[in-house]
Length: 348
Image (tube, rainbow, N blue to C red; front, side, top):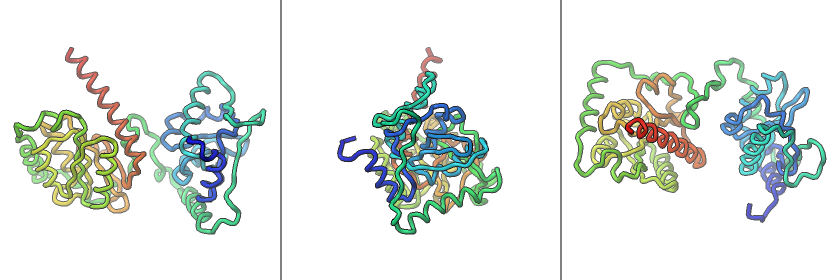
């Protein structure tokens, strides 16, 4: 963007670094009919775009090919073809996805890159240095082998992505220690927490301590993860507090009030799901949004029905990168504005 390097130079460096062949999108001419069997939502979720199709093969450009192996493979399998992945610069790919689908809707047949010199369809590809060390090539092989080893449909991500956006990752079975069966003692403890949360301090506003809508509480027992999320949220303009235990969270919620809570499922003494259940039953925090978080390697995934049972507004798996967290928060803010508008219109 600053003009210090061309897309080709950067693609060559990226290809050499990762071991994936790269695609120079601005030098390519893409046939837009390849978009007939893929949606804009799919392209944005996986940061990937189909750029070529012939009788045997689909070629998919992706910002992170290792993350796009499985969805690209499934897309190709549905068409009875094999798939080849190419790595692309994230910023160029995002622009190409947006422009390609817009022009496809208007009936255009080709997307011609700003630096394309060939008259017909053409994909400009760069290859990694042939002398590249073996571990980089091995990374690519591992990702491809992982996709080939998926043998059963139930092991694949759910196709139902509607209504969830970035808030949700389709889940498999939850680890047994994450699924406490509802019992009288559990319900009694929930009622106690709700009562504690509803003890109002006169200095706290009804929805957040300062009325900004950005008062955020992070509950995470892992110091490194907690600190990282605090830093990312603060850089995005959120007023952030953080605690390590569930009881600390209850004390802080009662004293200050918050608009958004990130609650980890492995929090000691009061896990994130139980705290979410209590917050959602609280009168004071009825409009507080709760996002359940989990480190999949440590705690496993959380099932859809369990999230719904506890009233969670969303679910995120860690570790999170700043870009994904930003997308999540922007999606959440848009959804909240729509809810506020609907509420205002209903009142009017």
